[in-house]
Image (cartoon, rainbow, N blue to C red; front, side, top):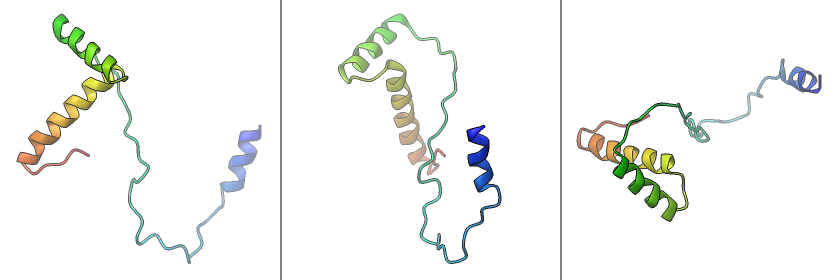
Amino acid sequence: MKESKEHSKFDDYELKDEYDFSSGVRARFYKSKKVSTTLRLDDDLLIFLKKKASEQHIGYQTLINSLLRKQLEMDLQQTNTKID
């Protein structure tokens, strides 16, 4: 009930004309969504990644994501393409 009252406050809200967004940065606070996927890795590779992630105090899946992103960005720089 409380939520619907809060939403109703903003239903007909419009921005004032004097608001200037010309120097705004598009998607400044955007955070990409994560998707679940299955990835089959060699057991020795997984052990290594988990050890490295533990040393960095991050999750091993976060480390894998970071390593993949860095490699893709390096590869794409060579072809002048950008990941969105």
